[in-house]
Image (tube, rainbow, N blue to C red; front, side):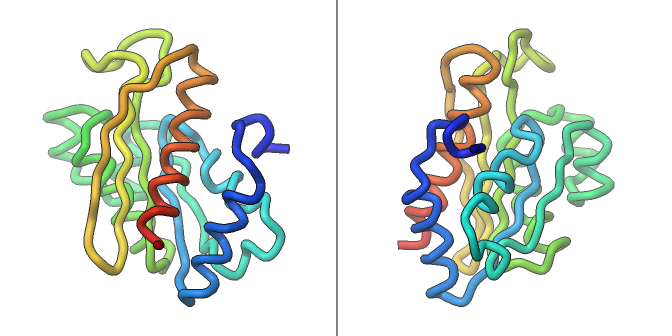
Length: 163
């Protein structure tokens, strides 16, 4: 259901879950613009509870600090849509949920800019056994398209990190 709405093949997400299971590793998310869609996509796969620890929906800026541990000075200086925020969301997700991997997403789905950042700008953070990685994407389309594409990009990149 969620996967269809996001345009994600079940086999792709199931493969990611299988890869985590084979490695004996777990994942958690901290999501802003996607508001839990990455966690929802992962948990659409039967047996995902063996590897998905949980997720934080940190849509409001103050929750990025309070729930995910993002530096409040970073938020005050750069706003909620910044590569370092994505990095800290990923680290916060894994730390707060006790997971091997963390995935953090922040961005602007639109239709209006946020803090001077254009709609379609998405920062994705990944923390794991080999450190932290951040990607920035500029995605096209309306609000739904940007959010769906952000989930697809996050899961595709994460799957690549597990190879």
